[in-house]
Each structure stands twice: as C-alpha cells, then as structure tokens.
Image (tube, rainbow, N blue to C red; front, side):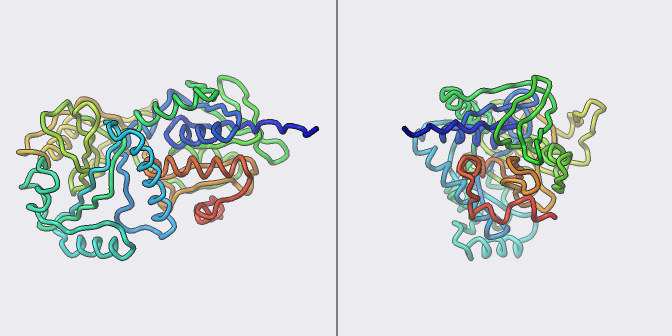
Length: 371
C-alpha cells in the first residue's frame, strides 16, 4: 500500500502583493501555508503603488521577458471578467521634457525587441484618449497600447479571498519577524504572535527584505527610496491611459479617482522618529496641480488621501528572486516591479518551493549575484 506524502508547510512573510500571490499559488499546489504580516494586509508598499503594468524603456533582456510574462498573466485575469474596475488595459503614454531625441531613442529601443510602441503628437493622443489635455503633451510622445494598470488593494483582496477559501491561514499585526534556522536551513519564523515552523520560508517584505535576511549572513543591496502615492477626490472626467510625464505620473483609479505619483519631491519627504514620514501639504497640492494639468482643461486635482513610505528597489534595480544558497529553504522576493511581476513571480516561486526545481527565467535574479 503506497504511503501518502505529507503536505509541505510554508510560511510566507509579507502581506503585500508578492506575498499574497505566492501564498495563493502555494495552496493551489497543495502546500499548507501560513501568511504572516507585520501589520495589516496591503499596509506597506503595495498600498501606495502606481501599479503601472508595463515593460517600457530600457532594462535587461531577462527582466523584460519576465515582465512580459507578468503582463500575460494579468491579461488572463482580465479575460475572466473584463468589467472589473480595478484592472484595465487601455494603454500607456510617455513623454520627456524638451528631449525629442531621447524620446525617439526610447521608441527605437522598444521597437527593436518587439514592444508595441508608437510615436504620436497631440492630435494622435486626442484620438486615443480625448480626456488628455491637448495643451499638456510635448512635441512628440510615445503610446504603448499593450500597457495597463491594476489597483493592488483590490487585487490583494481578490487573491486573499481565494487563499482563505482554499484553507490558507493569515496572521496579521504580527510585528517584526525573524527567520529561524536549524543546522543552516530555514525552519520557520518567530514574531510577536508566536513561532511558526515550516519546511520553507518566503521573505517578501518589500523594502525591508534585505534587513530580514541580513542576520542570516545574506547581504542584498537596498536602493529603496521614500515615495508617495496620492489619490484624488472623485473627478467628473477621467483619463483611460496611464501617463508617465516629466512632472506627474497618473492613472485612473476605482471610484472615479486618479492615482498620482512622481519623484521630484522626494527630498521634501521628512522622516519621523516613529519610522513614518511626513510631507508639507503644499507639496501635495503642487503635485495634484501638475497632475490636473494633464487632464481635461487642466484644472488642479484635489487630494483625497496620500501615503508615504519606502518604495522597494534592489541596489542594482533588478529583481531578487528565489532560494538563498547560503540558507536552504529560505526564499526571497524583492523587486521594484512588484505590481507587474506579482502574478508570474507567485507562480514561479511556488513551483520552486514545492517542486524543488529552479526555474530558468529566474536564473539571473538570484541573490548570489551580489556575492
């Protein structure tokens, strides 16, 4: 009589989109999964991400391929229910400030590897999205029709519901956690809510991932800057495109609102003794004015809310994904493109954790490249 193998137990550390996505894929593969998060689900970087689904601009061939597979998985999700107001594929729009040559070089690069890229003027933009202020764009811009956006709080709720329905356990407000080892191998985590033993651990703590694995003797360079995402009050006229412009990046958002971010104000974000951050409301108003200038007749937007915190970016800009050679059984997921990669990375990491076979698409993204 055959002996039935025991289910693999996994602790996922981190309640952002990478952690929740991987946790769901793990339970789908038959693992027993506990997801542990320091605060509430989606309370970190995933809750303040512009979450533009794209592979525009320049990056390594391996990173581009992974991002394109990420977009592919979102298209599958979109096809399940195209009426969702939190996942759209209406295209992206980019222009630079007074740099036609740079814009054309970007377009040529995108075309060189088959990325859907078109140079347009203000008239061409109006034909694609009449809500874009015709006075805003530069002399030439790039439209990428295959791009989209996702509201990560809504996506995380969607994935979390499936995770719990399949028997996954979630431990919120667990405080800081540490990875435990036994004879050099990860064997669980310890936090304020207790000790959770497991066959494998995934560390997906956004910008704090390097800090969590540092006590294990693993150094991952951390280039995470402080950033902000603002959500506008409801607007009468909204854009369809995700817009990446010199002074504001904007996209539609559920509830007839607009999500806005950029980086020109990073030096005006002030760290606080409690670990949080503040910014002058006048700076938020200026950002919303810049964003409003892109839409309709250019009237300023008004902020309904804004969130500040670290934006996860590895030191070399490329994702850090997979098992740590120095600590078998401990896996990491640390990347700037958490939104675009969330679904595909969750799938590939779950395969590696359960089956024990490294996926070739993650070969260049291992933490050992830094050593």
